[in-house]
Image 1 (cartoon, rainbow, N blue to C red):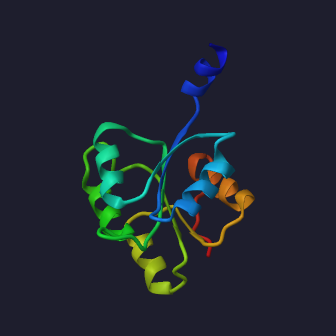
Image 2 (image 1 turned 45 degrees about the horizontal axis):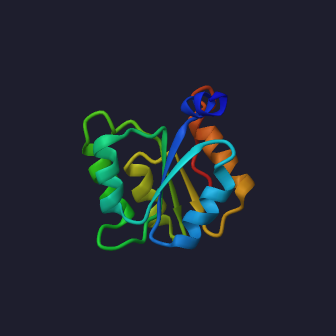
Length: 137
């Protein structure tokens, strides 16, 4: 009972990636500290967001049929969801992708492969309003 009560106060993270191995790595890295919900497409992420509001979203860019940028545009257009912090988690290293993410209001950009410690640090920074969020790549 105590554990259930404790879990209800944990922050919830929505991880969106079409690669099951990446979702497993994210879950393994975060489940000790956060409630992690995983979905394997932008479409499923949007469906989840119609019902729930996570504290943070980890969003892959390369997905089909709806990529991360399209998904993020729709999230930013949702009433009461536009303010959710988003960290792009991707293998795309080009500056244009980083700039597009910044223009869509991401708070950080993490390149794959990532380390669990780096992922945790970036999430903590994004969820802590007292610290300035900066893009690192």
